[in-house]
Length: 83
Image (tube, rainbow, N blue to C red; front, side, top):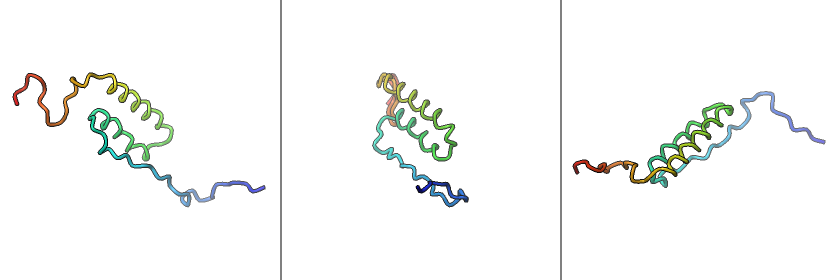
């Protein structure tokens, strides 16, 4: 039987390739801001990933439950403002 073993030198292990999020498809600014947190994930220890995913979940849930009329989009003037 062949045993799978780790190399003695950890620097010769390949680094995982992280998918790059294409944020151009995100039109909602709340969602884009939330998903941007994922860009920091590759540099964080694995033990911290759970908290990032929990924050992402909470942010996306808040965005889903928010009233679109309450969100100010870039380039728009809030109600009652001068144009």
